[in-house]
Length: 325
Image 1 (cartoon, rainbow, N blue to C red):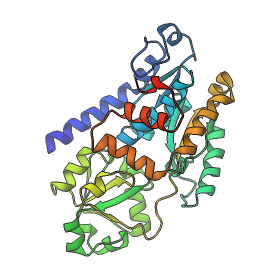
Image 2: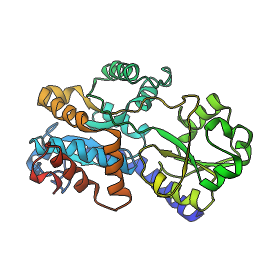
Image 3: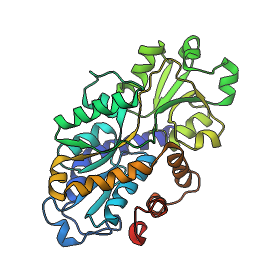
Image 4: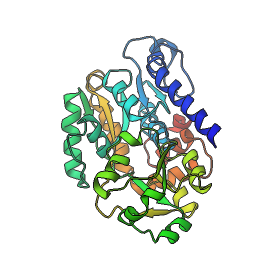
């Protein structure tokens, strides 16, 4: 287990060091299978390619394929750059012009862009208004928020829940000091992860183990009893499949996390309002149950997220035949 974790740490360092280079290069390399409507000549033209980036977890990769695939199907020159890293890497790349579109999560984006000055709220309308205002200051545009939400959830095994009589996060107060918490490496600095659990629930765990963003390392660790409590995501189909117990957020720590595409204002100026219309059309069709079902195809059935995205876009009438190539 330790060797696996060390390997993960090395990959994180390399990802952080190479993000800017990888994203910049996407504007000067030849076409790839993730850019079906782009040729080498377009890639060499400054600003000619719309680079859609994702965070480093499967659902975000899937969302980049969905939004990017919809744009490509409508003839926009698109390159998708998946699995780039955490928000601390990806959002600055968007603000700096290295990326042009990123499917974000509203509440977490508000916290990040406001430097923690705006408290999270479960009110969807309030959160979305705050996000629109914040991104405007960064020369960004917030597209239509999808009905789909994916929030942080804290999970334990059924055995742990039964042993300590855990149903809600508040129930952890008397036992957290004896338990090991696992989550993404950035968790100690995230308002809705360890700091939020401490502030809202008074929880201090015996130890924190840096793993991944609700991915296979986290699942392996909690099932193998290397950790007792884990951060995962509410749309993760493996929670139900592995009979994990989600502890209720009974004090409302987690904010509204509607999937919301963020894009650069200069890209809208270059390509026109139709670009935003395409992204908004995707958001208008995407709800939480659909997103969970799409995640299941990727994470439980092992399907290629690009093909899953393409099939969904076709089913929704949002793409042509070539969107899943």
